[in-house]
Length: 251
Length: 250
Ligand SMILES: Nc1ncnc2c1ncn2[C@@H]1O[C@H](COP(=O)(O)OP(=O)(O)OP(=O)(O)O)[C@@H](O)[C@H]1O
Ligand SMILES: [Mg+2]
Image (tube, rainbow over all chains, first blue to last red; front, side):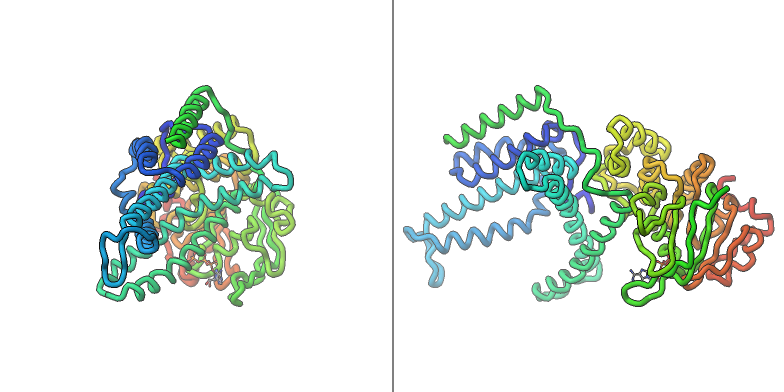
């Protein structure tokens, strides 16, 4: 079940895996900001290369889609909120609620933008080790005065490390309950509560054990870092991606 | 030879009041091969966790190579490598290779040295072909060997194995046992806990029985083995052939 985690690092040798982590972080930040202001054509333009890269990462899109149903739920919520709260010409009226053409458009736009940000984020997590993220973040923060770069980097790196733990525990706990026919219970709220409590305690317990294991092997903030090196290849890819982002902004 | 581990009236009380260890006094010589046996809950894991400061004594003291663990837990973690009872919970890295490199990176070795040690540890444990796999996808035996590789790369002087044979099939037991013996021959002090004496006893030079957080038997295996079952540990049936005959490697 561990392989089903969208947020876990997936070993590999794709261009994304090998791109210098500082450039990757910069691109991710830029791409996320830009995708929040794109219109439909821009979104299409942006999604195409991202999806092809994602497909190239050897990850089954079907499995990933299955896991991301939670995000789907969130998006559905955002979508309905948008649809119902936007004024315009009514295309459909259900009960006392007016559904407007503008609302549908707005809702779809917002959802697509959020999915793009999400896609960019998972690509980063899938292709970057937590130690690399730590090193990269630290590099960006180092020049800033008063910011404990090492500590912030360590915290972010640890956060990234612990996220898959949470998802693994969720799937384990839900498997354990399904094995005991939890599906016979109809009340979804009751099921959520019954699932939520063991998940919480398991996540804490797992995190505790992971922390112990790290401590036992002398973990501290100061450790040998992955070496940062930007080769010509990295710069070329970085330049191309920047150019592409500028084009997207212009669209 | 001098004692590398010294415990003096070590007592540990958990937050909920459970007494994990009750006045344990123990010395272990450098280069020894010690087996600690006892029923579930007798305090074996609790004892081991004091060796690298994962637990600190409620009273009493622990010294490793003369250094007080409470005062300098970092130093004790460099000296004492620990293979956990549950191999899953020992995995830290995102790939097999990263996991083995985790310890040496924490020791702040340079990259060349880290790569060398990782390569050595992976080939010693026969995991080199899995180097780029996600560790959570390994089999139970492979995970146990990965945990060992992660410790070997740190080159500790003492290696502690907490139930190293749990959940392993016959070849798995032999591989792990072989690793343990290799490290012992290389000069490491070895401490193994188990409730399955049969698998290691032939190689040990000291046997310790624990019950309810206390040490209740301590000496050379042939002298103690007859009392095994009174400590909730299965008596190895073939022992009448001589303790040496028990070895799983023959
Ligand atoms: N964190 C804790 N809080 C409270 N009690 C604990 C804790 N950890 C262990 N104990 C208790 O301390 C005692 C000794 O536990 P320990 O894990 O050392 O036993 P063990 O000999 O390793 O057993 P096993 O063979 O099952 O591994 C047990 O009674 C256990 O319930
Ligand atoms: Mg134990």
